[in-house]
Length: 335
Image (cartoon, rainbow, N blue to C red):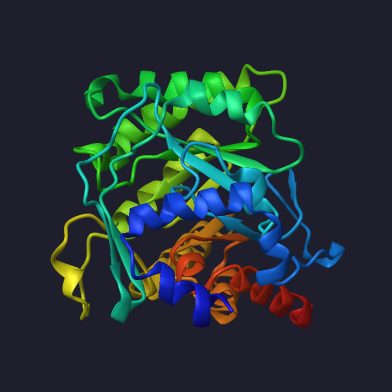
């Protein structure tokens, strides 16, 4: 139904406008979900316990879709096991100028240069206070105007304000759309950032898992640094991977657009990164696998490579809620 009827209509319009239109439909016409999409699978065998949290199934929604925590409940109703909100910054910011979101239909991909557009952490907290039972990850970043030498303070502000309202945190230093942000992935700045947050975390009565989201464009040497940093700072795990700057083998007209590429062109590389981290670390920490999951088989590959959980974004846009159902159904047949 989604791919044959709904997607062709949605894809005739501007991607960002469609995104907000979809939010309106889900918010106001939730009953349509039951008519148009498969009933979410609920089965104890799908449950996973990772970094001390119980996930009702291992298929989550990646950050960037519900940036401002406006739709976590409705999106959870589609069958996701967990929802990651953000990236949130201390102050509201508009992000980069439009047009900033592009479909690469022939490549089953998307290029975005959104630039952490969000209404700020305070507004998101007010919405999260209404959360009943959705497992939520809080993806945090820095404001564009904040220089890198002061970036730690932005992450601290978001961490403290979100602490009582999310189940785990994700430190985003890998978006290519905030100037110089990826410089924070370098060994020393990253150690300082994660070490500071983990120290604050350890002082809490009940610390929460902190994860690091990394780029797929890191070299093997940089990935070995990541393993060392995770072990040293004792953070809970890694999300692999964010979007890529690579444009290898693309055929769509929009391939010339700047920004981060997501979708099928990322499938192989993100799985390679997961496998590398898992094998080289001796499975020392959990990994959430994300990047180019468009089929149940893609999800299984990520899990077999070493991921404990997976997340969807572009695959969800191209395949619809059926993909969540297909992955969970496939997992039940594997057990």
